[in-house]
Length: 159
Image (cartoon, rainbow, N blue to C red; front, side):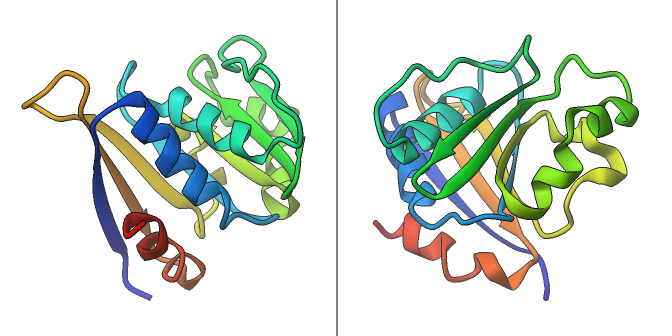
């Protein structure tokens, strides 16, 4: 399948969390989201909104910047949230157990460039960028080549 992409504009952090929650409702084990963009672009806020929407009871969702990986038992199954910013090599990714998690859990990975050849080819790439026109506005682009995403992304972008 050819690569496909859809770009949405979010006008506030709350709207970003709503987009994340709509995507969360479509996720299942083995789905991987690769969140890309500069520091402060909204990756962690998006991940928090997604995770919180899947938790059976509300809880704090910290950034895994220092722990590297946080895991959650969600209504959709096990979920792993990884922030790979501080990693220096792919051998560290193996130690974190991410390759195994990619097979059966929902995985959210910030700074996916650190995955190198370990990045799942069927992952959904979610890229964040500031809109030049307004400080709070973010462009959120969803890109995929695996057919599993084709029915889900138009669903969240038209809500």
